[in-house]
Length: 338
Image (cartoon, rainbow, N blue to C red; front, top):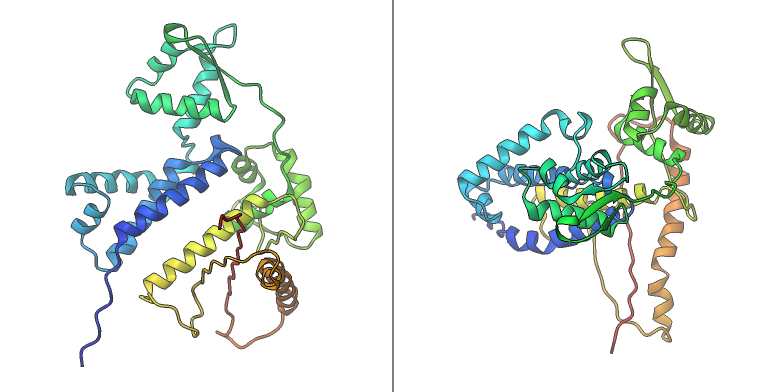
């Protein structure tokens, strides 16, 4: 008896529904620090990853191009440019700056004695960039409070807004970077965080005091730092950026793993996957307390499991039995009209 064919996924439809959600997340995060959001890098790298997965699934290049609304020549040209840009991770590490950053920097650099940059000078500086694209970036910088404008038409001018004191760098920032991207030397760490080395040193000391910092020399004998763990406790007001990234990363990774293994259905035997339920419950019903308390109850349970798992670190176990389990939980409550 022949195997039942795997149902074809409506990738174009799924993409059309998911991309706006992710775009909304990036836009929300950008309002915190838009100059450090690498939109082009995120979109480009995501496209490369998606294409790679589709090819592994046996989808033809013609079908992939069609799903993105591209001609074959346009698709090949796009892939070639993205592969060149992202080869060896060059996009961010080699000083790449987004158009947002370059426009913001140009407004500051081209400013006259009065601190203002005429609109025509800015346009001339970015000759070759589409006018609507440049205006869109300038408008975004204005909405984000990073750039001010005055005048109209030919007398239009811009200047960099007075910057409020930025958020203080914390040990969470250092530990998360070392956990995800380390090992780093002190010099490389400071460059990655865009701060002076003197600001990193005391934060490294705090991580060291907790016994969570690993230090080892590189080939030249320069100390490199890395962390193998980090945790943001409940009620901590710092580190929410890392928590957002981890949650989204866990959801996406679980979805990708399930799709790559062709597990398109849910089963009680699943070790990888997720479940989404929506309940309409009046607050005066006993069920409200049970449903609305889901997030709290699971956070407490996960904190307990984490404590117990850390107690197992260093203990002997049979070779090949260690597994990494990533659990994500979420909850959202909205008012709803009857």
